[in-house]
Length: 289
Image (cartoon, rainbow, N blue to C red):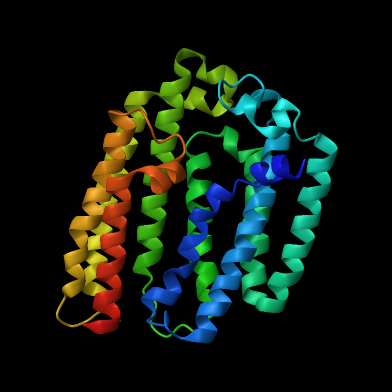
């Protein structure tokens, strides 16, 4: 049962919470021990609260998931984890996380509670409304970034990063919807009501718009943010961002992947290599240039 519970908590999804480190890195506090440890603790707590969301989401979707070609194998729909045990585990995780988040920072506690409430509303109602469902997902990523801001004494964190994060998560969200819609084909609406509001051509248009604005927004950030080097070296990171966006589009449209963006992050070598080069270049420019 513990193995089934851990699988339901989706530890692979915890990679999404890495965005909580944005404030630490881009405010030039990566090597400040206290700030790093507080952010690391925040990452752990955000991973726990996001896991509770996955548990409650699976509980809400258990009947629909049993009809899904892939999701039917999840622990709750398959019966490997009982509904009662899942409810108890989810409630305990929420209570423990809320208590520890308050001890870490009242501001961080507010973000954690807001993230949880927003995602509960998403699981119950908002995920059935086309466009709004992806907007809520994007808001969750922005909250992750802001959570990192609440944990440290930020001096010059650029608001451009909120915009870039919002657009990037919209891009990933619409890409995920496209991959899911392509997988389910004509029976998509019977699996999830929200797919009745999407078509592949419409999602392609959304992705086209958001991918372009993401690249433009990030490019503007690289030479207009207040805490960047005066020599505009951050513009050297733009090609890595362009490549990762194009690579993701390739995987969604050609390889028919992207239904789980975190799997791409954890398994696609070209994508990983580009992200590693981007991260190394950012750190070199911010801390050693």
